[in-house]
Amino acid sequence: MASSGSSSPRFRRPAPLFDSVAEAIPGEPDPSTSTDLAHDSAQALLHGVFHSSDPEVVERVLRLAAQDGLSDLAALWSSSPASTLPGALWRLYVLHTWVQHSGDDVVRRYRAGSRTVPGLRYLSGFSEPPDVMHVQRTMDDILRGAFVGDLGLALTRAGAVATILAHGTAQLADSDRDPDRTLQAERLLSTGEELAMAGRHAEAGRLD
Image 1: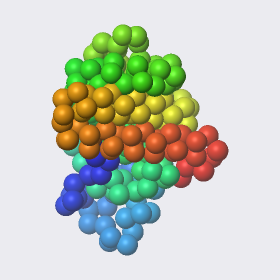
Image 2: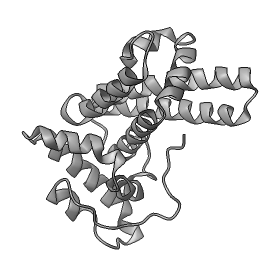
Image 3: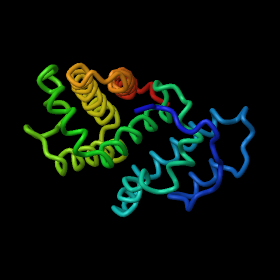
């Protein structure tokens, strides 16, 4: 799982979640303004959901990963460092999307990894033993928490999930003699470390 988006990003205005988000994503941005656009759009999305009293707004954010809107966010967020809000949210969305689309594979990796790093199981919030539906619901809860709960805790929990999956992927790579899984394990571990770092920055008020 990579934490970067397409090498040829497309910028187009999606059906906006909020007017402020739409205003932060122009049709053809100057590359020199991409960093500002990434930060502005991430802040607009986060604050728009947090200050909304409409539960449907939250559900639309949860569904964003399955809609075209994510490709627009990828174009803005995917190259942002993990220590920034857009970079952290991008990594969280990528992890969430993968778990939703590959539930059976995720559960297998999680079960293998949870035996290696049992202390992270409680932080991740997955059931023991996990099943596909619970794993997917838990990732929904983590993503929801990033927008309407405690951002730092949500990122920390996502980091724990990615780290457990990294350890499980490494074990499966050894048993299956699969070099591709070894590379996946390295990427997952990096993502886990980056999300955990972003969680610490959020708790310290330094994630922007």
